[in-house]
Amino acid sequence: MGTSTPSTTPHVHTIAVAHGDGIGPEIMRATLRVLEAAAAPLRFDTVEIGERAYLEGHTSGIPSEAWDRIREHRVLLKAPITTPQGGGYKSLNVTLRKSLNLFANVRQARAFAPFVSSPHPAMDVVIVRENEEDLYAGIEHQQTREVTQVLKLISRPGSERIVRYAFEYARAYGRKRVTCMSKPNIMKLTDGLFQRVFEEIAAEYPDIHADHMIVDIGAARLASEPLAFDVIVTLNLYGDILSDITAQLAGSVGLAGSANVGSQAAMFEAIHGSAPDIAGQGIANPSGLLMAAVQMLVHLGEGAVAERIENAWLVTLEDGVHTGDVYRHGVSRERVGTDAFADAVIERLGRVPEQLHKAHYGADAIKVEANATPASRKALVGVDVFLDWSAEGRVPDALGARLERAAGPAGWRLEMVTNRGVKVYPGGMAETFCTDHWRCRLTPDGGGETTFDEVLTLLAAIHGADLEVIKTEHLYTFDGVPGFSLGQGQ
Ligand code: NAD
Image (cartoon, rainbow, N blue to C red; front, side):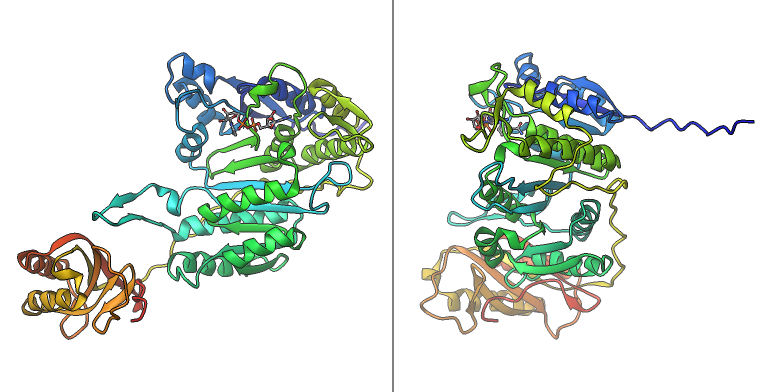
């Protein structure tokens, strides 16, 4: 009597595929051929986004049918897209990222020396960049004739998700160290929160070495000793700058993939553009998109196939089968076009590299959620009132006296006035340059808590003293801890 083995049907993931513009269709065809040859459990659903859609009248570059399919499948493999001449849609990537809540941007900067020349031959750094918050919320104002501002928003759930993602990524990709870069010495509340969250979450991953660096010295060290880094997790703006620096340092811009990941959806693409100068010639290097597809497979929990493809690709590089962009006389053996490069990778499926670092991925899909923010008691203890004021020769003592005359009878005490963050009243220095933008910190007489109604009474009194209020910020404590910074010199 024979024994029967239960048949297991592998799960097939349907993904949206955008063939893109310029070299996009050529490199996508090559990438899909490799995925099929490696028996990746994928089904492809083509969506039309980019230049053609734009020229057909879809101003955002993304027709609604494409949106529906991307949202249905939740994973998009995207070839590069040409930004239409004369403006057109601003950035299709920003639209996709923000609309789909893709909070993590992951870019690897890796050198493949001696097979591909690089200024830092052993470099292999991954930047995990927060993609939605920070100065990119786009909340900017001009408040006075002289002063503009942008709001930097950093949230606990946003920080937690990106930091957790960096540690989960490190585990999935067999990496040993996660370095957080921020500037909490200057931005104690915003960057300070990011660093605190990093330290809390690092404690949950004892298998991974965690450290924090101030971003300025961190960036300098990264530029001079990139080999000292493994995974870097950072805020949106720092990540934007650092990922461009590392891409250049590794010397492999044409070989790198990038992932934009959210809790509901994810998008994978090469970091280069649509290269219209070589489009249609069959010579483009498909490696960046292929490596993005490898990241996609790891994200889907298909680590074994990802590993097989990446290892075959590394063997192809080691064998000197190179496209024109990386071909170097004396190092490369054979100069090939896009399709022949894909054939060379397919022929090498099942082999592992001898010199380059072998790929090894786990089988778990990367998934992260933020915990609920802990409850705390929030209390209103004062207000910062911002004024546009240029009268009386901008002498801070004159402003201080006027404010005290207005606020005192309303039951408020003037703690200080700052100009661009520097305390100028009481006891400022004559040398401090003053713009027309003043922050005046007021607390209830006798201290303690206050109410919104009392703040309104104060504002009416300040307005009645002929001072122009341009904005207010409430001062809160959370479980007794001040949720606001002190003025420089306070
Ligand atoms: P690019 O990356 O397309 O090209 C820069 C140079 O690198 C060119 O000389 C090009 O021939 C070469 N190159 C790029 N990819 C290559 C590859 N795979 N193989 C061989 N050589 C390659 O940058 P660009 O010229 O500034 O931009 C072209 C278009 O792409 C623009 O419309 C731009 O807006 C768009 N773009 C799109 C994305 C995206 O879709 N994510 C990213 C960047 C640029």
